[in-house]
Length: 314
Image 1 (tube, rainbow, N blue to C red):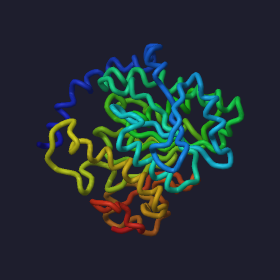
Image 2: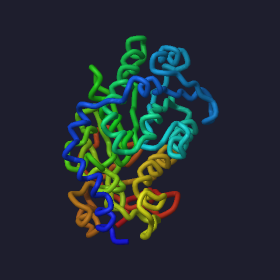
Image 3: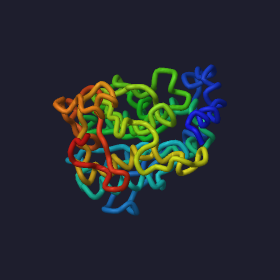
């Protein structure tokens, strides 16, 4: 099926852009806000964890190792703390052993249709922000916080950053959601943290079609079809989401192999492929991205794990 035909299939979603003001005005009902919780991993595996609702987050502080930085991972639409993507990211951090790992679960809201979930993410982000504010007021060190979000979870991360009266050091957006955001300012922007790094893998389709971060990475041009993903698939199928999901798979790999993805600064993928940027600045994509990195960076990957080439190749 031609890619343009798939866009036609998405027209009902795009036509609702005229009603996008509901994103600013809406929010989940109190019953759904009550379902939000933070999961702190307390051992060496994904089976060891402590769940606390946002009204009880002070309990988490006694279990947080204040000598380590803390990462908060925000899952995407239709996901939960039990999803494959979450386990992959958490496994990577637990294998490193150098972070407190927390998952922000908003699965009751995320389990709704996408069109119902989008208007409610501002309230979700504000609720998680209030929980973080409570933790900071009780002694949690905000300077050690890193928020990572995938897809619609990346947009939630933006609202977390915007809802705080202090600035998060770093937010990483893994292919921030595009539908209903592609023709508007993305909620996740470079203003939402001291440093915002974005990994685009489905640019303009399920991923946002804007450069939104302090630094934006474009593996394989940042667009579908990513190497190893199918050319033919049904809409909303596993194959359809393959390119979109590459973002979290790349990040999970970068937790285990920090120098796996080396990118080069360039103004377009065409110039990158033509070798016009070989002598430009290089940067690591993923966990080890330097917070001094700015601009647009391009790279190639393998079609199967390990995805990283470890060096810039044309």
